[in-house]
Each structure stands twice: as structure tokens, then as C-alpha cells.
Image 1 (cartoon, rainbow, N blue to C red):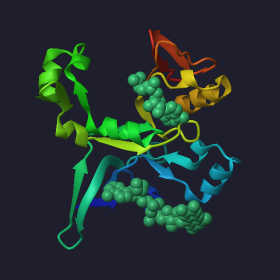
Image 2: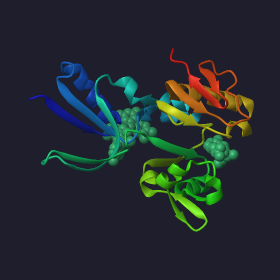
Image 3: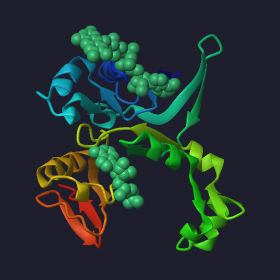
Image 4: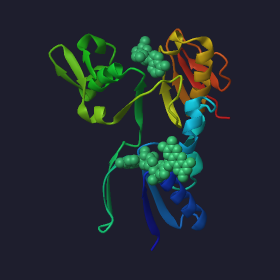
Length: 227
Ligand SMILES: Cc1cc2nc3c(=O)[nH]c(=O)nc-3n(C[C@H](O)[C@H](O)[C@H](O)COP(=O)(O)OP(=O)(O)OC[C@H]3O[C@@H](n4cnc5c(N)ncnc54)[C@H](O)[C@@H]3O)c2cc1C
Ligand SMILES: C[S@@+](CC[C@H](N)C(=O)[O-])C[C@H]1O[C@@H](n2cnc3c(N)ncnc32)[C@H](O)[C@@H]1O
């Protein structure tokens, strides 16, 4: 019977276990599943370099999909493990990983609450309003199952752009407040964090000046070249 291996956590232990198994076992002779709540490894020994400024923060993270060849990576949160019964429970992040960041905790509190005056939904198609929102009085709130699928983190994008490989990055109306040389660094980090073919959405007044790998495909929308 083929081996069925599940690894919980994509840190040092998890990534190296999966990589060693991939190298030792004939390709696809086993089913290796790595369950992790982040799609990258944080390279902790290099953190002091990032903190002191001698390294770019984006250089201390390693995207798991680039390191592993045939391991099945599941973005999910492990909720319990029972080795005797060979059972691991997890909350799937529905195949998608939705992450929101802001440098202000108050902004994240509002985003988590996901409660909006009804007038703000005027451009949202009616079918989506019914499917994804609950209404109370003059407000609409994003349904709990959708709220639960999003992770929120406090973060300063000028110091650490969330590592990835992301299919879509929405970064609207942020860089317009920054000094151009700081914005340049952000374009670079966003380009790195996008998968080839992935999309970046900016505000109307923003342009990724100097970003070599981003092509404009529609107003405010840029795609990372596949090469
Ligand atoms: C600043 C710093 C410097 C260090 N320098 C060194 C060094 O020079 N040499 C050295 O040997 N060690 C060093 N360490 C220690 C080293 O980082 C740890 O020993 C190592 O990361 C432990 O590996 P791990 O796989 O057990 O955990 P981690 O690397 O922490 O990985 C755990 C992974 O599991 C994921 N996860 C957690 N909970 C869940 C869940 N419920 N569901 C799904 N996924 C989950 C996390 O997101 C993470 O990806 C350093 C640590 C720090 C903080
Ligand atoms: C004008 S609002 C735009 C919000 C939203 N993107 C939109 O388009 O409606 C700018 C947001 O960027 C956040 N911000 C500003 N500088 C930041 C930084 N360096 N890192 C992370 N967030 C930042 C602010 O806290 C604020 O919530």
C-alpha cells in the first residue's frame, strides 16, 4: 500500500521533512500532504539581519511552493491531531488564502467587523448582497463564514511586504502617501510576491513606476509577466 504521510506545519520541521521524503522516495510512490496556515517558511536565523536593516525583510521568507516539488500543500489550520487514531482535523481555508494587513490596529478592527452602512453597498450586485451579507437596520455585515475565511495581520508594508506567492494583491490608495523612493521598494516587493500571471490592483492615482515585470491590462490593474 502506498505511504500516506501528513505533515502539520510548514516551518523548519515541516518543510525539511517533506523535502527529505521527496528526495528519498520514488516520485509519487507516497502521498505527502503538508498542512500549513502560511504558504511560506520564516527563516528565523536571518530575522536579526532584517530587524537591523542589513537584509531586506522579503529575503527572510521562503515560499513553500517553490521549495517543494510533488508535496500537496494545503493551506489550512490544524485544529487537533490524534496519532493513535491516525486522525488530523483542520479548517480548510477553502483552497484560498485571504489575508488583509494594515499598520493600524484600529483599521483592522473595523475590517474584521466587516459592517457597512447600506449605502456603501450600492455598487455591489444584488445577488452578491444576498449571498454574502446579513442586514440589520441601516447596516449590512459580511456573513460569518466569509469573515472566518480571512486572516488579518498588523503590518507595515514599508518594512515587510507579506511574503507569498499571491494570485491577487489589492494595494489601493496606500503608496500615494509615501515618498517615491519608499514606493519604489514596495513595487519591487509586490512584484516578487506575485506569482507570474498574478494581478496587482492599485488606486486611481497610483502607478508602479519602474516596475519592470508589471504590465498594465486595464485602468488600475496590472499583471505580472509570465517570464
Ligand atoms: C530570531 C530567531 C532566531 C533563531 N535562530 C536559530 C538558529 O540560528 N539556529 C537554529 O537552529 N534555530 C534558530 N531558531 C529557532 C528555530 O527557528 C526553531 O527551532 C524552528 O523554527 C522550529 O521549527 P518548527 O518546524 O518546529 O517550527 P516553526 O519553524 O515555527 O514552524 C511552525 C509552522 O507551523 C505553522 N503552524 C502553526 N500552527 C499551525 C496550525 N494550527 N495549523 C497549521 N499550521 C500551523 C506555522 O505557521 C509555521 O509555518 C531561531 C528562532 C528565532 C525566533
Ligand atoms: C486611504 S486608506 C486606503 C484603504 C483601502 N485600501 C481603500 O482603498 O479603501 C490607506 C490605508 O493604508 C494604511 N497604511 C498607511 N501606511 C501603511 C503602511 N506603511 N503599512 C501598512 N498600511 C499602511 C492606513 O492605515 C490606511 O488604512
